[in-house]
Length: 313
Image 1 (cartoon, helix red, strand yellow):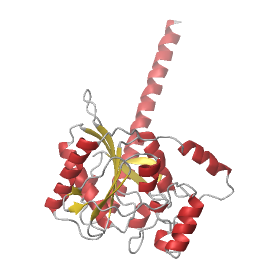
Image 2 (image 1 turned 180 degrees about the horizontal axis):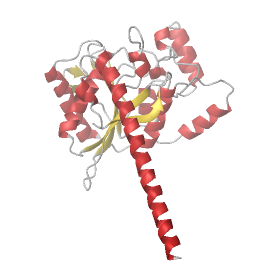
Image 3 (image 1 turned 90 degrees about the horizontal axis):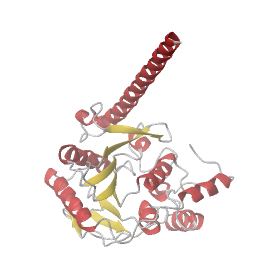
Image 4 (image 1 turned 60 degrees about the vertical axis):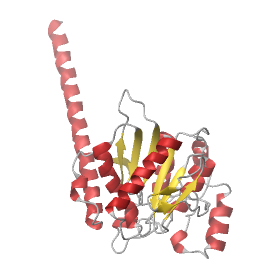
């Protein structure tokens, strides 16, 4: 009986060791994927360096991919227990992949966080939401591989009438750069982000674009009057946009940083100034009195499952 017990212990130990080994292999595999994806971005953008893509530097795959199967990357800057973070902040670049500066500047801000992250905020950074638009053969595109503008693909009240018909057909004249898709969240990139908003529950979302050279804002409270040399100038809220979805429908403040140039980076001093002003504004204004509304996506997804319209993958 004693021999049988010892044998069982040995078998269990071997199983645990095998599981740990498999887990390590999986982690190494995912780290390789993240590094490879990052290096592809660095090859495309001069302001992103290979050192930004060092293995195990914290940039990881989310487990979700674009239309063409490219990984969506993220980097988490977690709380520092026992300190409780003042807010959860989601920072997004590259929704429109032809706005190259919106991707590069996020990588530069991650370098600042790598050095100075104090646990004041819990950061979730997505440097490039639209990898297919950036990494395609030829010039980078605003839209994804299905030809959909991801920043018009989020849910909105009466989406078909407002986002598709009134906005895209009547207002833009079927401009292919602003096609909102066949239905809300038809694209894997926007669907993943909507789910991550529900899961991460950010107190504020910061989305970087170009080239209007202003600060735009949706939702409560009042937006920042200026970030660096960029001043507040409300551009309007479009049906299907992230600002409409998160800012107006979910009560999550959405700060949209519109850089002056899509293909030219701000000077180093201005990059730091925008960052400092942003952090100070978040510290002073977030979280706000009005809580975000984190509900409705599950019901929305159930409605999608009932529709006959096929989803693009």
